[in-house]
Image (cartoon, rainbow, N blue to C red; front, side, top):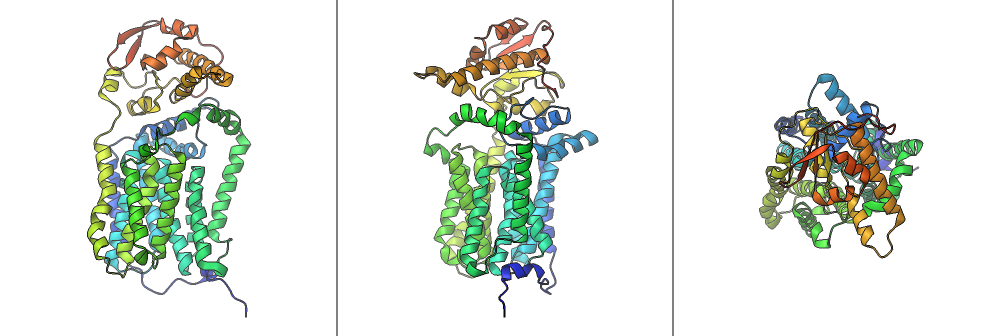
Length: 503
């Protein structure tokens, strides 16, 4: 008699005959709906604002990577295209449409996760799903729409699916494919994220041994998403040919100044939660869902440290998965865990309290920046000359201004200035600086900014170019408070033939 793996055979097994109680999911979705409504009035962070602006420019005819210089692969920007189209057709704020879309995606994630959870009484199931809803949607409150939030949304049901495979519980093929497609899209957003499915598959293999099969509906779905995406990137080739060399030249300068810089509040709490879960192995070992979420959080921790940026939103999936794993311990564990149960409520509140504090005290737009752009009506072109991309994109989309540059900010200036101090400056970086300056002059002539808001050191770099100095003769310096602010006083010369599309 042949042996059939439960992991494979599960797809053909009929669901259990128990009567499902939908109340826990309904409660969680109700909480999610309230959170979504509360979030509608806000805006998005600078990265997401740039993403949404790019979607609008692509719809207007711009060619990503040729007319818009962006260092990230295209998937995240393609995801924004339907958001922009709906916002345009319905005349709605694009941020609001994005927030509703994220809320809807979280709802799908929760519904899939609910179908994949082991048996649990209605009260505990309600608390677990409600906490998951709050963590996945509200914890990234200031970073809604970031890739890290999207991958966390996708990882929750995928971890539950891998745990179900570990338990040899029945899973419908349709549900497995749907979860696999979502996970594939989430993990494809950054190559660092691929650590997570690799670790989860290695854990499933080690746990199941001869019962493990690599070809399952979800793995085929993930592989399919990855192959289609890879083919799409190489078919266009602009990212590979134009952007990858630029990344090698100048982007490497963006690293944390030291290891301690990486231990910000979100990352530190995430590491504490992982440590608590590792210390509670007696309880964790018997709960595959907790083990899967813990492994996912360890994978995201690895991705965080490999990126070595220390940016808050990079820690979101590590913190979220570890927090939901701890909540799952409390929901499923049969151990007494007296000490853990006493400390867990405070630990589980920390991610949400950190998020609330961050949202209540945004660093941008600052008072100086608000003063620099005061009085500008919607629809006018406004330029920013700064290394920090967040300066322009904490305020441009929000006020409906037009943006004249093909660069989201002049982040490469740090590498260019450091190169000048080297004993043997890299000629390629010198040429990059000339190209960026020339392209900026062309962009400003094609779409003359009503106002230019500049930081002193980046402006000084541009002022080395006679063409930029001549352009600035059409502007008058009106303020030195915080930023150098130039107001247009006369018309610029007619633009050349090198204007980018989609402006």
